[in-house]
Length: 286
Image 1 (cartoon, rainbow, N blue to C red):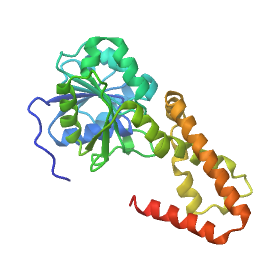
Image 2 (image 1 turned 90 degrees about the vertical axis):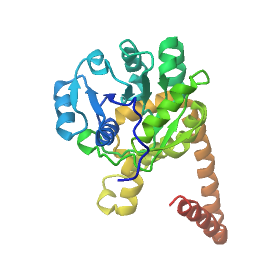
Image 3 (image 1 turned 90 degrees about the horizontal axis):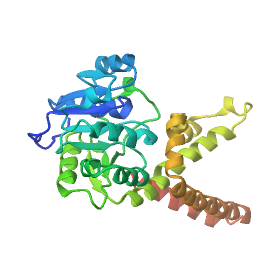
Image 4 (image 1 turned 180 degrees about the vertical axis):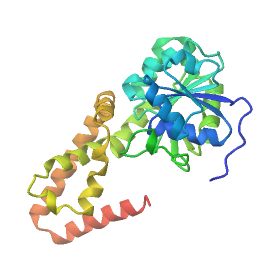
């Protein structure tokens, strides 16, 4: 377990709305710090599963009950539900409480939050932990999932500095490392490194016919691993970040055309050089 900053005195109770893989992992990390964690789910069975997994201390099926008295509310739902849940939480929170999220898209969420109410806009600091898996559910959550991982914070221009500082202090308690940028920068960059790669992985999975399936090896499995992600969650991400994803798909299409031309041209040395450059870029991230 990594060494974390001292726990802030104000951080005693946290509510997590949506205790799946990410929400459950956040809950487990916080409970190790002696923080009381409350979970919310629409189903009683999901609340019980979260308690049994050790992700939360208690669980409720009513948002108001789950959020009342909490210092921080983490909205860990699909991106198309984040604003709705944040609004519901705001109704029962104290003025100095924090609301944050784990969504993979940011610009639309931040804009909708700003349009809701001054109270909510002062509390909400958008965040995105760069951690996860193609697996889902609290049964796959771990207390160390966020350790050493980036947590991107994308506050709005009008977000109070005190709320931003509080959000950073909170996310550091999970083991995350903070990086700040604008919501628009986040969405463009995540389209490049996450959203389009997911779609390409799904495309590769869909291209293999039944006759080829017995021949797939570790390379194909590695390339298509993320295609096993939740289609409902990824549909919402694609709708929210449509423009940035389309821009990156255009870039991908152009690059694919250039690669095809390179291969068709028969220039072996140029092809080898292209592969060398790609290998070096991959190794630079390891």
